[in-house]
Length: 394
Image (cartoon, rainbow, N blue to C red; front, side, top):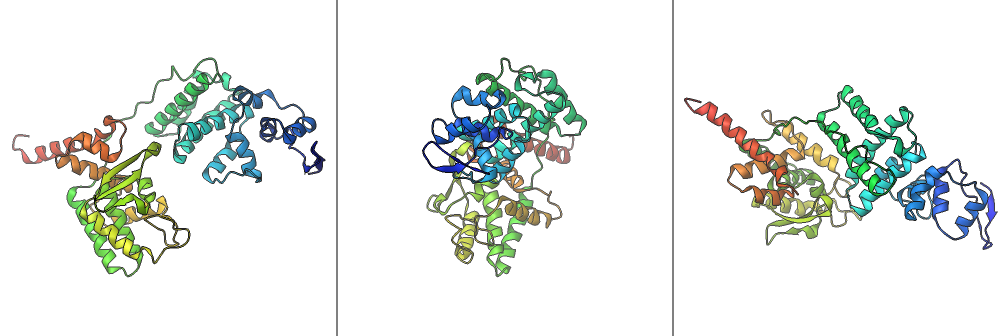
């Protein structure tokens, strides 16, 4: 690039060409100052399709950050999955890419949704916009209920699961409700869209004896293993089953989150909501055994993380999933479940043991009691099976 003289006398690189509309939008949105002045002097006017969300609310955040994310700069965004997502969105036409990233920014900053939630919304909506572009749609206001229906129909023909189709429906509903409230469109095309019907299936789970056998085997393996890995893996299984916390909550545990005197863990759940969950003695024994070996793996990158990977950093969710699958596969009679399967098992066993539904809801961190009620169906199904097997006139 050639250098240009700014009014202040400083030398800077020339602003991006209008062929890069996101960067041009970033220059336009930076407000009064040398960068804005030069952008207006050097580049032609930015297309209205790029500027309309900027003019509507002042300065939009994510799209401009995405431009620097790909080039590096003083406000470079430290991202990985987010960076890949925004770069993917930039392949869409600006009239669709800008509101998509604007919406993701709203989810992340205003609603404080998790990175995984934002990534799921972005993937669903990008699929919709790519379908719309293939149908000749180039503006957000041109998407109607017919476009949404053909998008969902394509998914159905591609053998997408009913739960995936329902998620697509929910993502479009939330996005267009937001777009309508922001004044980007005049009417909500998703308002008349019917949700896909999802068959209600009981989650597979472990029996009480299966869970006990798997955990006992894990503890025995840890005692026989001379490395910290076996002890850590036993702690992973015991804490997941003993507390019912999510895999992300387990990986996010810090040393300050443990309260041995009250036998509780403080976890940060969905929506950045904090809650306290109890943990029984077997779980605490497994944790204490791991903590006695933790220093062997500690590095400067360990921080306050309770569970570490072999290189000393906070343990990754994929490692936890691999550990759980490995131990459950070792038991022939056990279904191949992931960490969420241990959460299901814990909740089911609590209800079968007489715990009330509201207490289980609090422990699991469910916002709605209806989410917890699925475990009552599991228990009722087991009760019916036992009745049919044992009752002489069943």
